[in-house]
Image 1: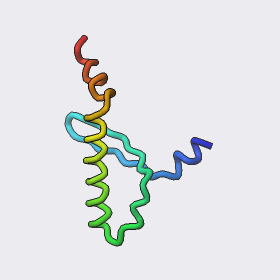
Image 2: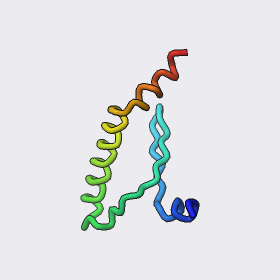
Image 3: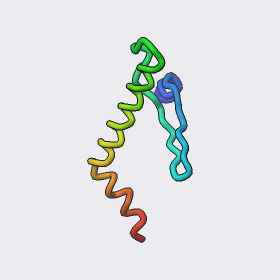
Image 4: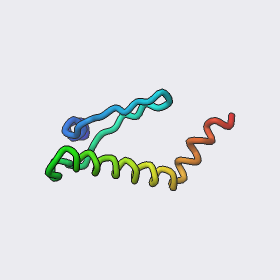
Length: 68
């Protein structure tokens, strides 16, 4: 069942020189009337995602990886 649901969601890979991020998009952006508005909403959601990660204990745990 999980595999079937996983294939329903669109996937996106964002890549810079330093980071490769594979995303599974669960939000239905089709509710927004134009591509420009959908893009703005998606970028806002990415910003919120980053803010949530920044506030999470896992973010500090991740960066402790580099202590060793």
